[in-house]
Length: 383
Image (cartoon, helix red, strand yellow):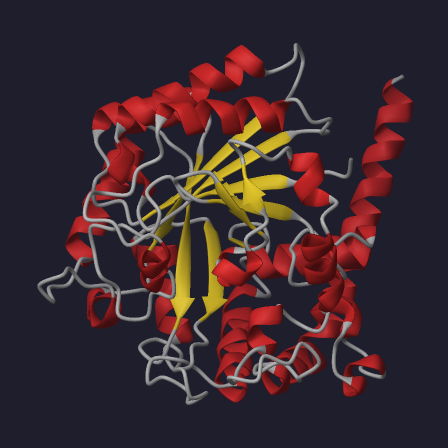
């Protein structure tokens, strides 16, 4: 079967903080129980075993939440025990962990480092920016606690990147956020994602951003990065653009033509097509009873994947469609009508960004290709 990865929610929507803009907190309504939502050892083992029975070029597990570190170091020890137990000889297994970092301990960090977990830390910028929306249940900011978590990772030499959600708190402060991450925290790997959220009536929420704001933010980030930081700082979006231009490969689902790329596995084993669409009507099955092959081939999953290409008619003639891919389906579902053929809420911003930067990316593409040719020539000469 085609390659796919797992995005696992071992603690469901449970979290030790209460970010104002978190879209996943409402998923607690799907599992309204009084006790903590935690993945059992039985579900974990069945999920790992079933996944590693499928034929994959590499096995990729992404542990997210909620807050996955609520599971504790013992859970992740079991993760790796089961991966070793059920993995084929020579199989490649990768793990990533997205966390706010607050519960990071030396013991957990040592384990993550030992098994080469790629850790993503959620951090929105300097303290006054970060603490606007990333709050505790009591409304206190979490910036200092997050920095303490980063210190634990660095002390234990664990590789990490920073994921910054671009909201109304920082959308006008792109250069400041970039410089803060680069200069004050010495972060080499940045990921910026847009905050687009609406209420039940289709009204934009106060912390969400517009397409115009998104485009301006990306242009400011690009201006800071281009001409000096290309080999110093990795921006995930920019890396993906270069991958598409050089290799013709979409390494993110946003740029792809089909949304069948991964499964979301909830704490009880329930499986969904995407973490933006964890909804009862989109339930694909459960790992305790349904093989991944059956869920992959289900009509519900096939229809969900194909909907990615049902973009707006205006997209067909857009010069940036190859890079935009009609955008994430979530960005089209910006009203209660849920129309996959709607224009992306961020369309204006994407056009402004690509219209201004694509010539520079194409020049960078030529540089990458020249370096590849030179490296290939060097290998032949060595032989």
